[in-house]
Image (cartoon, rainbow, N blue to C red; front, side):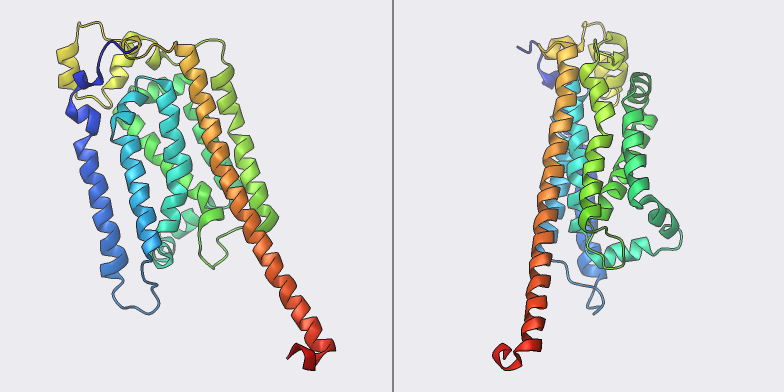
Length: 308
């Protein structure tokens, strides 16, 4: 049972009002671009209600993941950290991609400075290897502990991974008709490969003989890492009170770490499983339609009057 309430860190640490404002501004910018800037241009498709709803869902999940008490708990328990990572990089990016109209993506992709980078980074093999490689490197203990104790490194790594996650999901979720999407068995192979490439990082976390992250076990390093989400003035006021992560949970560090690795893998399998189901039904409908067209053509050829 928790003996110390999270409220001791204050409202700002719990609900991140500045991040809330940032998310609200993103929503305003989204509707300004997709509705106001679109105007009545015939070559720019109108915003669909489903897309608007998906964008609101993505922004809500973004705030819950990075602005609510979930973010604070992610600095206290490794389980919440992995839950946060799973939603940031496996759930939100594909929703975000399909929520943005194609004409907006075209404007961005075809910009002179961005097109070469985008074209290279969304190549299936590159997207798979780079995201999973950077994600795995992040979870090497010495790297993660260093990143979590430096606000600039942490912000930079978080943004980089989010961008790489967009590149990762792009080949199988975008709706552009310009050769940006893979199809058929290639899409199935891509999804399966993504599941396999995350195994080393999750395996290291789950099967480590002890808790391997000092920012979750060492009191001094943990307090330093807490500066990422708790105002320094608040932490200074709590100095000398003997705060440590053990005061907020009764889960042993090793168990917490193992549970975090399992949660990450389970969420990934759920998301990838959903994608595989979508791919299967899309393939089935395509094969069914092609079969009907072939049968119709054959019927017209041999029995033109009957076909009419």
